[in-house]
Length: 236
Ligand SMILES: *Cc1c(COP(=O)(O)O)cnc(C)c1O
Image 1 (cartoon, protein in one colour):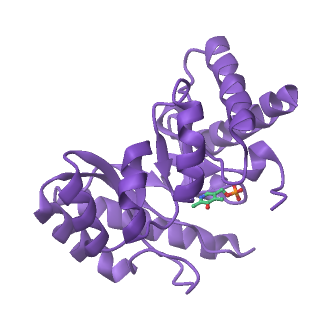
Image 2: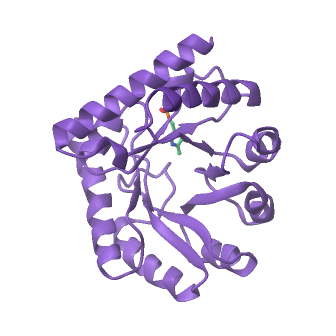
């Protein structure tokens, strides 16, 4: 099992490196985030140990990040992993009644999609890292502000003064048409460029998953969120 995790993680890093080299980007500019939903703490720990071995063998690599979708899973697993993670990103939707629990265990909320949520976070914290989630595909099942709403939301969030908006996040269009998927990632990059130019957000672009990370890296991703490519198909 551990060997398998080593191999799969290496394969993901190789995909990132290839996509970077094709796009003339520095592979050090892209961080891999393990999307650990449904995986138990011991499996996540094994993946982090595999990552530590890889990083020890190649000092140019940066350690993986960890992301959870659901606050219940975050709260259940984060205490068991506190010695091996620098904090866990929340990459799924955050409901108002779960904000306190999320803040206790999350080092970055990647799913800020409304001013109401941003206000709740800002009231309770100082200097919290967040990303603003944008629904670039317009698919109704996906959360995130609309592309048109992204810059106005960034302005409102900046007005709160207490959140550190590190950049933008999206879940790409689910489609076999790579041009259409890529167009969505390009939209996120353009919004990030516009936001950063106005001093409203940092440079991070969290986009790309197991199926489309190559396209996302080509479009400028700085974080790719990978689940099945490392852990195998989810059973639940
Ligand atoms: C599950 C998930 C991922 C990873 O998806 P895979 O296809 O398993 O790589 C990335 N981002 C979010 C928000 C997710 O929920």
